[in-house]
Length: 154
Image (cartoon, rainbow, N blue to C red; front, top):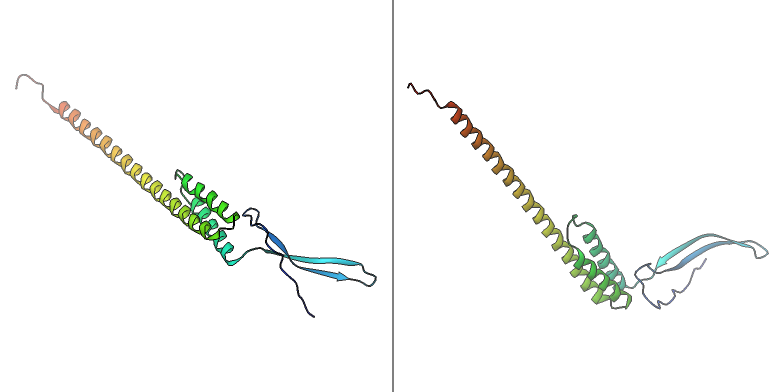
């Protein structure tokens, strides 16, 4: 048994949907020329450079998706769009660079959101502590005022 074939040329790279071609088809042929397709397998088009670029873009998108709510990831999202444009233009090195910057931007946005949440939490605790001290101090002043002897005969 011998299997051979050729991979079709890639005319244009598209990010979504990822391009694929029929890698192999298994068919059963009966006498008389009647055949049935049993199974087909598909493979994605890619070169080493395009795969690296796609992986970088996917990684940047994951960094955005993992950012906490409230994180400003608009810059990273814009960079991903630019990376996809570079990918579709066949400029894979540039796509990798831009996707790396998108990842860094998303990570920075995540860090800022976490710092802001921590600061807000500390401010809330500080406010609760001040209110608590004011209540305790006010109660103490009220209690002392109730303990004063107002008897004039003394």
